[in-house]
Picture (cartoon, one colour):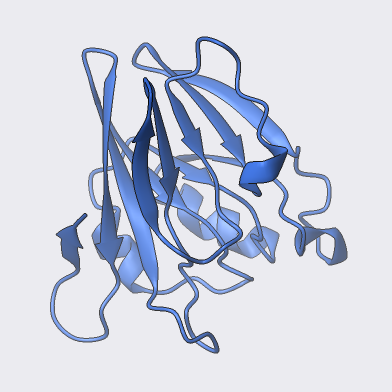
Length: 157
C-alpha cells in the first residue's frame, strides 16, 4: 500500500502534490491544514485522514481531531501535528507528525517517525516537501519527496 503524507499546507495546495501522490491509496495530513478546501482537493486523489494543527483553530478545520490512530495494511499509525503532543500506543509502528516544516525519516527502536515537512513552502524559506509511506507485509518504509519548481518531483531520503 502506498500512502501520501503531508503537513503544513496552510491553506495552499501546491500543484506538484498531484504528481507526487500519483497512485497513493490514502493520504494522511499532519495538521496546519489551513482550509477544508485543501482536504477536498486531496480527496480527489485518495481517502484523507487529517488532524488539527496549532494554526487550524482560526479556520474551518478547527473541528479536526488532535490525534488519530489508524491501521493500514496491518501497520499501526499515530497521526499528530506536534511531536511533543504524540501519544503513540505500545504497538504503534509509525508516528507521522508535522509542525517544524523540516522533513525527517527516522527509526527509533522499532518505531518509524516521519515528518513530511511543509507542502506550502511559498512564503517560507523551506523547500516544499511531502513524503510517501510504503507498507508491505505490515512493514513501513518512508521517503521524502521534494516538490521542485521545474521538472518531475525528486524522490529520496
